[in-house]
Amino acid sequence: MILASAIFLVTLVFVIWQPKNLQIGTTAVIGAVVALVLGVVSFDDVLVVSNIVWDATLAFIGIIILSMVLDEIGFFEWCAIKMAKLSKGNGHLMFVYALLLGSFVSALFANDGAALILTPILLAKMRILKLNAKTILAFLLAGGFISDSASLPFVFSNLTNIVTANYFNIGFMNYLSNMIIPYIVSTVVSIIVLWVILRKDIPAQVDISLLKNPDEVLKNKTLFKFSWFFLALLLVAYFIGDSFNLPISVFALGGGLIFLGIASYYKAARAWLTIKTAPWQVVWFSIGLYIVVYGLKNAGLTDYLSLILKDLSTHGDFVAVVGTGFISAILSAIMNNMPTVMVMDIALQDIPNQTLAYANIIGCNLGPKMTPFGSLATLLWLHVLGQKGVKIGFWQYSKFGLIVTPPVLFIVLLTLI
Image 1 (tube, rainbow, N blue to C red):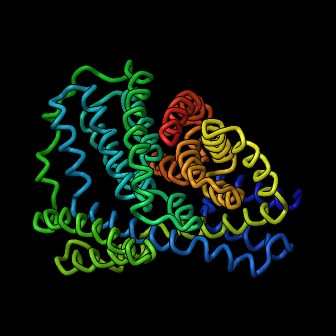
Image 2 (cartoon, helix red, strand yellow):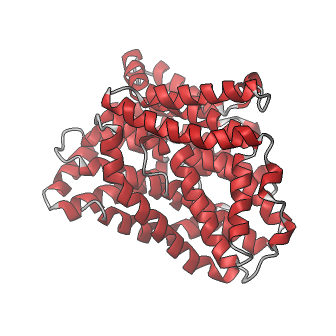
């Protein structure tokens, strides 16, 4: 346990620290190689991990490619400006609409897509609107929170969702039917809690005349209109694929590549450049860190967790669901939600209560918001903001996350009971 824990902790420290611009994927792969060389994991373990994460990884690539192409044609910028215009200059309405937009993007394009693409657009628009630093920070913190708290409704909304759904053989429709209420509650409660905490930094009025007309930012109106039809068609395809037990990546990656091909035909995107600039480091991070964490499983961590979870399950649904959710949340905040979801899934496999798998997902999606390194989406979000000149300190972020996350998490978990 000591060696496995040491490799994991060193890997995580370097992922967060990123000395000399050492990228997160490279660090995770190095950690995986060290774990393999020192015998913490075996080649068979690598194959097991690959079997667990391949679908999630390929689906993530497809979603990011689709998001990048939509961003290229002005889809998200159009949505952001439209949202601001709908508020009619009311700052508090704009705050609510911005979070609803974040919830929509996170649900359909995953939390990482929301962090990578929507954040810089919203930041640019807020600067155009000449909002002060406190207001911008309030919008950014709220947007960063909603990107994870709203990544619940679809299997493809978060990597943690895909991994858990695959691990427990939960179909697309079955997953949606169980998580649509938690998603709605999470979005509504998140908005209320965030508004209560940040309302003093939200201006009463905003001069929206400074923004362009939404249609002016579109680079190809024909493709923009078609994109709505394509997204609807893709969503239907997920349901059809579910009836044939097809992997989620068939449609996520397939849809992303098809739309990239269509956009390239209309000269609205360059296929090679899009593929080249996709965040491949996230892929290496996912695979590498899972292998490192599997070493913790081999060292007995999942056995300890399984004993705790089995004990919780004997005390009724309330204790089992809330307890599982908060254990996942705390572990995610401490050691990142990617390894946590895998460790918890393994620990839950012998407990005949699938509701706990959903509690694990909710904990792993919301819990990471308590620390800056709790989720990959937050790491990406902070990286994007840093490149744009916005620095958010560890304690500044953690203080905010520790205030907002527990009440939202608790209420959302109650929807499973």
